[in-house]
Image (cartoon, rainbow, N blue to C red):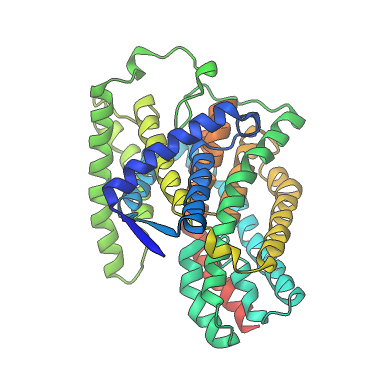
Length: 405
């Protein structure tokens, strides 16, 4: 087997090509367009299939250096924080609590389904969490963290590989499920957005653009101003992250930057009213869309699908079970309990994204829906706080309980 290792710069460049491949596919394939499949998702999956073809036919393994990809995630969550308003957070306080409760409940459901899948295929019971919330809601990082523990407890040698494979499959399904769920809910209930602002991530699709105000036009000055504020927020977020770590609480850097962005956007504009603050401007929306789209394109194009082919039918069956459980949970509980309105439909797309995949997938799902049907700013504030902050703490606690039981 020959190996080609792509440098960080080249991998990022390929990410751009993959994104535009997704744009082309979305324009050409009605299903992708009608069911709000994000462009970087369709392009990333196509690229992953191409790398699988290279591996299978030409004996060439392509390895991407993704070090620059993680920087994009910090950029993205910083823009989300800068778009947040305390008034929205106060208005969404109840919604935040309901969504957190639903997430904790679904973590239990997910692990119960994983346990049922393990029993169905005669696998060790402990493996249930790696086919449940450790890999799906938790993602690759949690699966890798728990893999050695599950291997030691169960004696199952491929525990970590199983968790990584489940996380990868979940990411694919999450990216494909959220858009259709939102479309069904919006069409069935004839829901519309009541917000007049631009979407918080990206701009509306061309046929739905409204007249742009001069103060919110996109030019090099507005983009540079927005980038400067983003960089300042990241610098302060980095220092805050170091201080938080010093007292024993470890948070991902993007969470610290998200929180700093929220604080900055709700203090500086009032202290310096003449300063042109970029919150909820088209320029900041473009930066958000750029960061998220390139991050997702690079994440999906780097999937090594051939590692999944050798793991048998068990993971596929369990993932189908998990997907059905997620869809039922969203239709029966999430959509209804968070309001049964347009924001609820957008949040439902996001819930599908992070409950089976990851927070960036959730935001991409919601962004694709919002760019077509209209903005839902509260959804973009509430969901990241749950999926990128609270859920990791709850998930670790519940996984431990399931493993001990």
